[in-house]
Image (cartoon, rainbow, N blue to C red; front, side, top):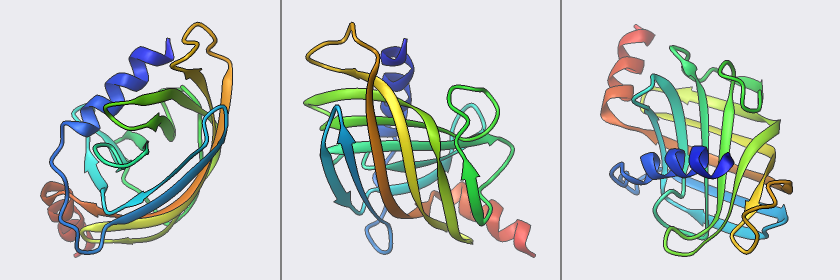
Length: 170
């Protein structure tokens, strides 16, 4: 169940172009069924094809990737946002441990939060703590493995989001 959903989410994020390295950055670490430390400049904010506002961290590079998404039609706002698990409304999260070439596990967010600390035209920053359930590659039949993922981000928006944010602020 999680494999298809998470693979699709990460594949969609990985298909997007890598952002400029100017001010985008992320750091994350996971504990539990898969222990990962990842950081880099691959932190993007974009509107996905389903209309959900999405923050993608480390989708193409690094040893772990996290995707955070808000419901269609609602961009990020400063403050704390609770994760709503697999519900269609609210914030969702998907985590892949390992690299694109050598994934270790796939996990869907069940609980946690994202605190957006700054929203500006062209960027969004914050921190997160996500508790996620899924499976590790060594045992894909056991979908009851847990990880906790914590970290920070400064994500750069793609040009369409930056334009919309600039127009909305005026």
